[in-house]
Length: 482
Image 1 (cartoon, helix red, strand yellow):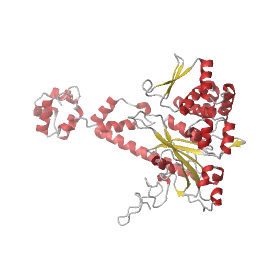
Image 2 (cartoon, one colour):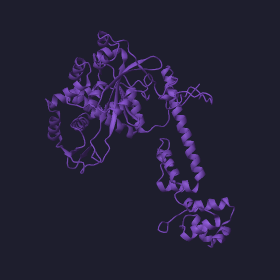
Image 3 (tube, helix red, strand yellow):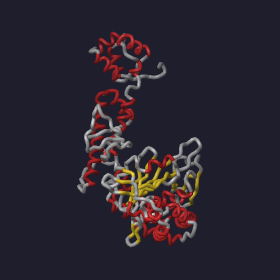
Image 4 (cartoon, one colour):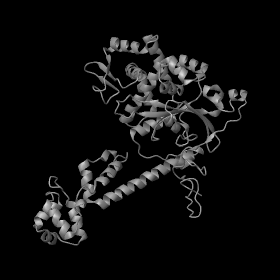
């Protein structure tokens, strides 16, 4: 304690106020001058060991109360100021510390108000989804971060960009890649722009997947990436260079509100264009139909990853040559949903994707295995779901690998067109083997929007029902409701 300076002016002022003392009276009790106590209370002088001992003996103050009292409040206040409504007002750490220490009751009130506001915003969002499912869309919305705006727009619209598909086909004709797209892209970048592609070791580039050095005209890739991801990074860079006008046109059509949102959309469209280049539309669509959408067959044929092939299946909506209208959801092992897309938009109102009983959550128990399951929503709609874990960039021995899981879904009525549907009872193949009708797992859009009774997986009560608190009866769910 002697080596650490402790500035605790607001706390000393609160102790003095709680005891009803003037500065002169408290200074006499501590054996210091009123002017010195005034400097301490204004954080212009630190507390000495002697003063701390004096406070403990004269005013029965716990010395630990004088250190770091507001650290928890500072963390909570940081969360408050990350909200889109306040993002332009983000104060520095020292300002937050001063606020939390000088006015702890006020800072606690701000935190409570923020949490109440966040809870109400979530409930409004839930109610908005309920109304949308009933065909009564509303304009309920709050301030959003740019990433939220981009995700929302991409989730609502079909995951198909005709202009980028055309540009990718023209680019393929120029490259004439044969069986080596990676080599053709590297040669094109070198020939047309003098850009050299180089893979760097982790020690040299520990924090980036890809980095373009404009001065040396070199595109660096991390060795952490798989060959499939390295190919996508190079394809993205090449597509964003060649398709500048087409990408800008698509961004303009999205009507985004901020420069940051447009920058994020450019990245998403670059990823789309890279997939279109790696898996040209006509050959990929033909192969998908012939293989009955077998993702492992498609990934081998086009030299891509499982995730890339599954993602490409959601893009097959060209007029006159469309495929099964798949939708896609990617989560991490904490249940965070951060990628959603669909051939006709992600079916948020019909499917939701927030139910803990979906097979995508089970995949983490058996990485690399494909899970196929039929699920039924509360309104009777049924979907075929295909789920599998995905491997992220390779880590070192001491690092925990990043693992996410992908769910690919479509209407259950299309199961006979898909190879995965053959494992379900009630499919054409299943009928030949004498299997019965499909037994679908009952799921919901999300716990807050689901009214299934007795669900063992329920994590929250529904917003549409009051809680049923009965001391004499306890249901199977942790959240009984009426």
